[in-house]
Image (cartoon, rainbow, N blue to C red):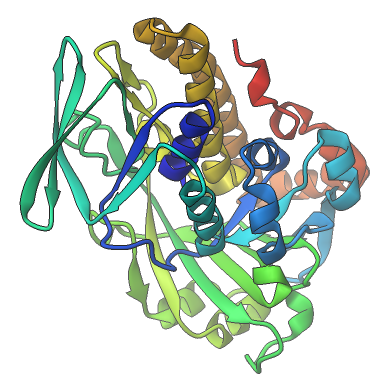
Length: 387
């Protein structure tokens, strides 16, 4: 997502762009995403929002429930309220549908080339820019440009740290997608089609929300887990997840009925390392600052990074080092605050005993709209205000 968004953002400002994608082709992989207004506002500016909107859902609220009794704790207002307050919608979407919209937009733009099956192996810097060494189907190619934007995720080969900045969190994400209306052995009422629902428990949490225009539901559960491999995901035995949710019969039944699950070890990237080099490289998205998903802002931060980087490079003209320094200066405080919000959500969502009781009481005292306005700093953020 980060790389395609960056390509569109730079091309929209008149830059020539080449995108090197490691995969042989853009495939329908992944699961659901939550796109908050700070991200959809950018997608709207880039001409992508209306392309992805038919395949997305605009939920009316985020609902927090206790995992055992399924009782509602509180909710955050979204829907019309969110769109009017923050100037853009809060959407849920399948990753493949967003990727398809981004790719379609990219193909309509001048000065852009998308090359698949291209594995970037190395980068060399020289007075005229940077040269990439690329393995393309067994042939080594070279590509030269003024700026390299590294959007190659947690396991970035261009970060230059020999794999020392990423670390396993001790948490595992379990993901599944189910079709609405098909028999799954659990109550459809547990996965409402018009809200994002988070079920909270000291040992885990499970989030469900509609995607694919409401035809499907994305499920993601976060539990403690062992690192399974230094890679992103693998098919999983749902029995392990059912066992982890055994204390909450309703959710255990949901996990069992959902069928096929993907197991996803959660890694973070130490954001204190460098994100840029004045010689002509910038890291964006997970390559720079992968974080846990407790704030549901991974995709949004990557989209923000792409938009801000393109804007600052354009604004600073030929002074690329100044643009890259401004990018780090502008993005670091924002990313740090979002990461703190994620840590806060993790603490409160997995709280137990008196802390959980206090959480429920305090959260229940606030109206859905008040919960939403407390997130003005997050959802109301505007990329055009970057200095």
